Length: 329
Image (cartoon, rainbow, N blue to C red; front, top):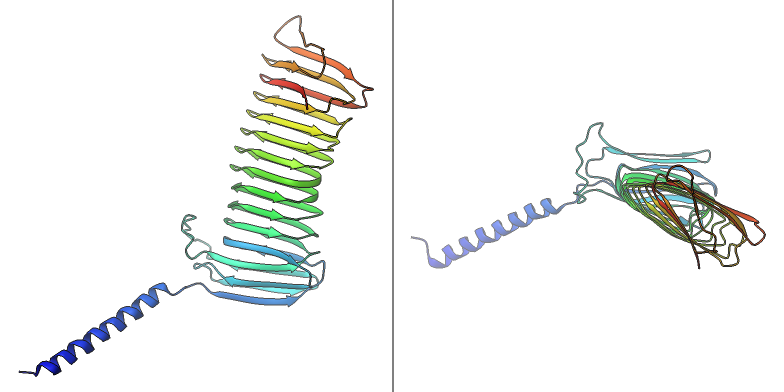
């Protein structure tokens, strides 16, 4: 029979060994299987940069220096990455297997990559499952993802942002700006220049001082607060567009709706010719003047034509099975 003290020591040793084994197993389980990335290269100030990352959380930030860099971790399922830079062109692509089963809801081991690019660079990004945060690019930006959100700030010159299942948030864009979302919404604040918004199954909310604005919705609503806008084009199917124009005395506005409504709120000193048409049961409400819509001799069509001020601008709107409302600010 072993002495009690020796038996106690053996039990303590076994218990300690078991604890060490459990710790090792837990550390292996918690180990991050993703490949680390840390690349940097000197590039031109107007470098053409192409980035493709199929899945993950992506940040693209413009910096003052002429450097392209990428840091972070690849997706767990990635087979590696391709990176090359030559003659003014830089390309980074996270490589994935040809066939991969990817659960968008499981982001535990998705890629997390941060890119830095020159302010004057032209950047094109393509993704499938992931969110993108991009800021400060003054060359050109073309950012596209399928399932994910795009958040952008201070993008200039040529800006194109598109997503299929996700939201687009832009603040302080300028130049030629195109925002496109399917099954998502667009939120734009403070953009200027020439703007184009297009949504399907989503809404648009915009506060802008752009000279030109083009809006298209299908099964979605748009609420626009515009200042100084000179040209506005509206189109909606099964949706509602509400547009407020301030400091725009002679705008050129055109629009159409099918089974949808258009509401315009304009300055009281507006100078424009108005031509409004409604058919198939549509209605016209005019609160800008005492002019009333007239009903067609045959059928349910209605029309309204009148002029305010010198008629320098123009407002031409039509609706099928919808309502058009003109109101004062």
